Length: 92
Image (cartoon, rainbow, N blue to C red; front, side, top):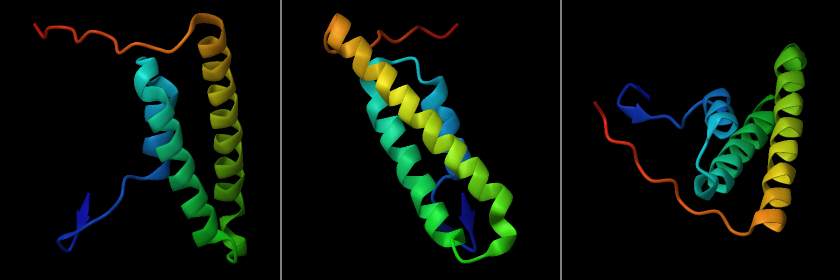
C-alpha cells in the first residue's frame, strides 16, 4: 500500500493471516517471523495509548496464535524432518 507515494508495510493483520493460512512448510517460518515482527512493532506504537486496549488484546492473542503455530511446525519437523517446498500448481 502507498500513501502519498510513500510505501507502507503490510498491516499486521494481513501478515498474521498469511502465516495462519500458509500451506508450504518451507515458507511458514518466514511468514511467522514477518507477522511476529509486525505485531511487535504495532504493540510498540500503541503501548502508551489507552484507547488501543482492544487492539492490544488482539495483538496479544495473535502472538499467542503464532507461538502455537511455531510449536506445531517444530513438532512436525522433529517428527518428519525438514520440510520440502510444495510443487507449484498450474493455473487453469
